[in-house]
Image 1: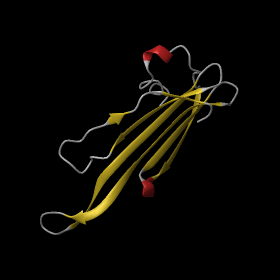
Image 2: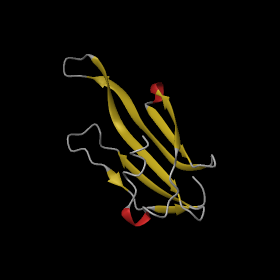
Image 3: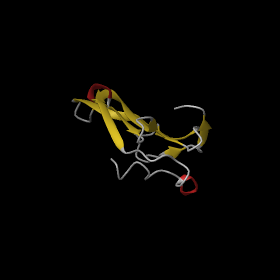
Image 4: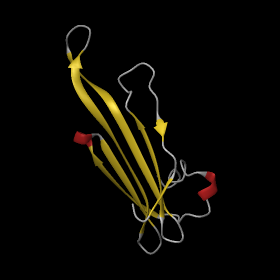
Length: 113
């Protein structure tokens, strides 16, 4: 993860965020959720990424029960050097359709994660 933490970071913020040096990864398989937290050299949180997938139960063409994904969300936050955070949210509510589409919202400046 240490080489991917800035992959989605917009270029104009590349040198304005605090770089993490250690990471914690938490997963909740029953909720299809993952959270990755990055910490700076003083142990303060400077990166946060969480994602999850919602599923529904249904039946396939042969009437066998199946689970299918219907919603995906990912929120990534980076701490700026002055202490505020930038947040990037992407989601898809069309996972059960042929023309899946990932929507990325504009960057949001916040006081905290």
